[in-house]
Length: 234
Image (cartoon, rainbow, N blue to C red; front, top):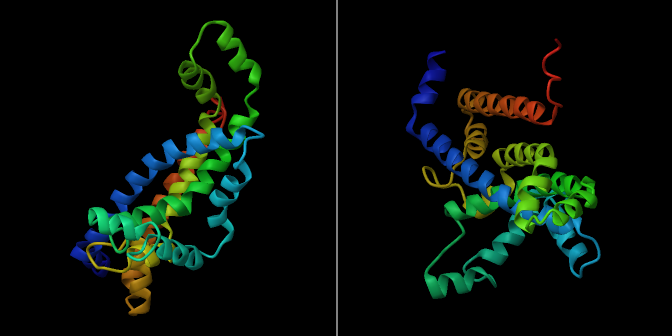
């Protein structure tokens, strides 16, 4: 028990948990906006580029994380087609920074947000939107008050699953964020480092923390997706 408190009192542990919290909050915000936009776009059939976008979003689910991270490293690094202009023109470097960690988390979890949202939009009948238009509602009002309430369960499920995937990401994170103590070491990376160095007590404590967060996310998912009143047997 004392060893566990020592691990929690370690500044390196606090740094890893603080970085993880920052990444988690930023990831949820990006997943919320991007998940809704991409999910609604993919739910519309027949436009050019839809299948390519679908493949691009889904790729991190089926591609090995290390390979995905390497491709992003080549793309966003100082000599990459996107990273080089950003560094030369603005002095902005993505790799081995907070932004690299954030991109890794967003990319890893985004498919798990977009797919449920896409299915939710596809399941909402077009008659609801048409009825709202006949009542003089704007497209924004239709989205906010008609479509969004009908997919809130799918959206909540996607956000929880995406966050869980992002919290556990190691492969892409290693490639884009590096392994810089106090700057780009997340809780999952700290577990990885602890196991490599033989600090199994440290790995166990951090695993318990992430495990507890995962259980809370699962409970939140259950409450978000169960019908109203089903949690109360009476």
